[in-house]
Image (cartoon, rainbow, N blue to C red):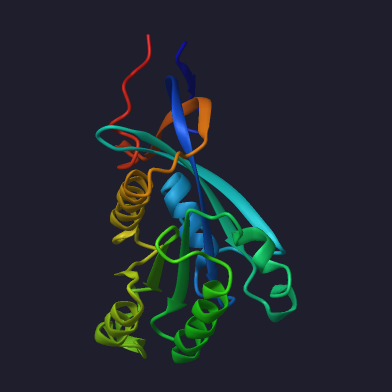
Amino acid sequence: MAEKKVGSRREFLGKASALRVKMVILGSSGVGKSSLALRFSKDEFKNSSPTVGCAYLTQVVCLHDVTLRFEIWDTAGQEKYHSVTPLYYRGAHAALVVYDISKRESFVRAQLWLRELEKHYIPGETVVGLVGNKTDLPNIRQVSLQEGQSLAESKGLVFMETSAKSGEQTSELLLNIAHRVNQRTMDKDRDLTEWREAECVELYQGNRPHPLTACCPIGP
């Protein structure tokens, strides 16, 4: 049965089975990891405090032939949490390493995050993306688009620049990752865990449905 919550402007569109996908977001403190996770999950933007340990959000992505339920793990970027971060990205199907295009130091540290990640994932099985965030700050850009593309190409990574604040390229990024995870699973003949009775949710910002879930069928 459909359920509507007017106060939160969220409408549940029925039940469906979905495949579980674990995705972790890594990067230095302040690059916008929490904002990206919130944009992926609810298509919202809020100024947030630094993450303590790890935060967890979800989003259902409907592809043509499969529904994926993303578990989005937002990890803390502060140095004091680095020793426990590997606990969060073990077993991840996808990982995003994020830097702030307006802060070169975050790009340098993104390369360190990539090296650390390489110690824990199996090449060919985990989809890894490099994300240059905060394209809404073009006047103070310190990392060029070409630098990000070059680093990603040298390591065979997905690359995209985004703005968690405006939402630019965020839906495209998550859809890109979803397609790659699905394709890699089929290529490797590996099964994702089925998450039964996952709620397919249409999220609204004003009168605009969330672009990732508008494809879900309306329940009876």
